[in-house]
Every structure is written in structure tokens, then in C-alpha cells.
Length: 152
Image (cartoon, rainbow, N blue to C red; front, side, top):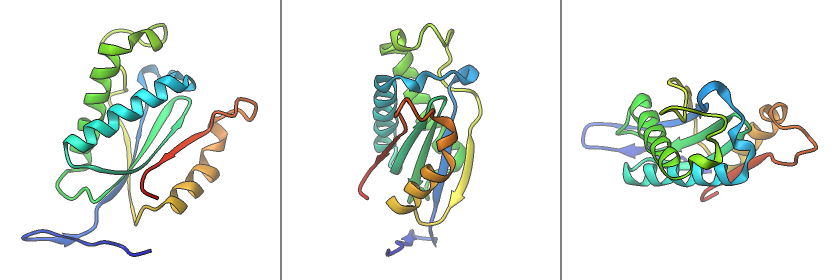
């Protein structure tokens, strides 16, 4: 795999993040497939608007993993706030009926987030991550474990 180093007028480097967002009150709202799809689409729309490249998104029943790459012009906090803010606003404004019985008020996500800087992100590293660390989040009988990859 070729690792692309980003070059700017005064910098050279690589910036890849693994972000994890959790719904308010750690509710299992992502058990519902439509909620996962809509949330994914709003995160992708926010990323496109703000020039954040997303290589993969994965969901557990009560959290969302976002893998970004080439994110040199955004701090981790800024990237997280842009993605969470837009997706929260759109989900609450347009789709509250999907999760309104579990979340209330003006919250969709918790205030915080998890982040880790990661090396090059590719489909194989994301697949291994999901297989090895996410199985505990999904009950085997539901068959709902999910990973959505982009440009693998």
C-alpha cells in the first residue's frame, strides 16, 4: 500500500484519525438500520463540506467509529465537532421519530468523543479492527454487525 504524504506550503506529513462518537445516554439507537444509514450519510455530508476525507465508518449498537485520513487542516477537536454537530442537528430536525423514545432534549451525541491517531488507514486495517474489537458489541443472533467502507 502506498502511503500518501501531504504537502502544504509550510508542512509535510500525514494525519489520520480514528474517532468514536457515542449517542446521548449511551442508548442503543444504532440497532435500527435506518438510523445507522441516515447518521452515516449526514457524517459524510459534513465531511465533504469541510474537506475531511473519511475512509470508513462502522457502528456498534451504541457508538459510531469514523476513520479519517488526510485531515491536515483540522484539529481532532474541530473535525469531531464538525461531524457531530451537523449529523446531530439533521437527525434531530428530520428523523426524531426514529430515536425520540430513547433520546430527549437537544442531544443526539454525548459531549465527548474518543480519538486516536492512526497510521495509514486501508480496508484491511479497518476490517481487522472491526473483527477483533467490535464483536463484543453485537449479539451473534442479531447479525447486525456493520462496516461501511469507502474507496477500499
